[in-house]
Image (cartoon, one colour):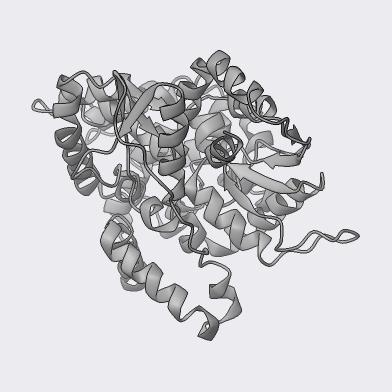
Length: 421
């Protein structure tokens, strides 16, 4: 694609990167077929190709409007378009640049600004979020049904094994996951312990930075990234083998620390090192597949329990990890059911379910129907945001002609391996 950047963007880091990405786009339109918002709205400006055109206009000097901002806001950043694109357009990075530029030029309404400020300042604070969630559970019976279904039940974490192996890996605690589903990281620690790997959680590490990053507060996002690097670095120097992330949404951010902090002289090299050490938990467990098979063989055979797996966008499109979790679940004895349109987003997408609730609910309804279409006994996923969002849909969904209702549970897939072992 031909570009002619406005003077204010020429030779700037964002301008150079955006121009490089724009020039890869040939406007072939393959991305339209996999874009969730285009499927729902049928408006090309709510497709990757249309949004790329809008961002190109802004970068070439046209004044963006609130309508421009709306089309960019409606993007889930699911990156399904990147999986489809034959030209290798890094759309996710481009839309981050475009949103930041448009927000600085257009601004936000007072109400929208307050809402976004609350989200980026409250959600990453684990203790604050935990207190709010505990209070929500206490008063849950008094709340409207629509809010009740969004409050997850408390899940016991169980025992976290003491470090005892020569092989040691770090794990990202996360921000909302410790309060919402502490069993996920604990289950990961138990699975890896049986595979001869000790899992350690570094003190003072917290939110990966994804929430403020996607709300266009790059300063706050980078501060969180640096805080994590500082917390992890002594362990890295001591020989930690990897940094494991059990929420694939957070994983896509940690994987790009090197890119995010590439202009920071003090953290550039450390950030690159952290990104090379990053591993999604599925990648680590799959490398121990032979040892896992021996452990499964020593236990009673699992009845072929039907299971639907929701592969988060961050896993299949962001991290490009496909089929790995499914193979591990089949090894464990589960029978995977078909999930139509498995490449489409569930509508969670970080804070999207709050900021774009109507579109999010449409996507959720479609996703729950697809997951339950194969009559599974259980649903599994790989990201805390997807888990909580889909759980709210399962809590209010009934499929015509079936007995499937809120009794269909959803868990992180690693919890199933933990239970199997």
